[in-house]
Image (tube, rainbow, N blue to C red):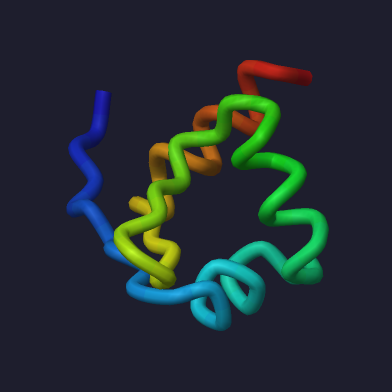
Length: 58
């Protein structure tokens, strides 16, 4: 297994751009259990964790 360095996405725009999705979709994913956090009004996520979540959910 190859180790991959974590890549933090620091705001909603970075998350949307990384996955090519709209803000609405990212919020939907979060509500469905994606590892996307919200600190105050700022969203964030670790790219590999969200990608893994997408693969696991099918």
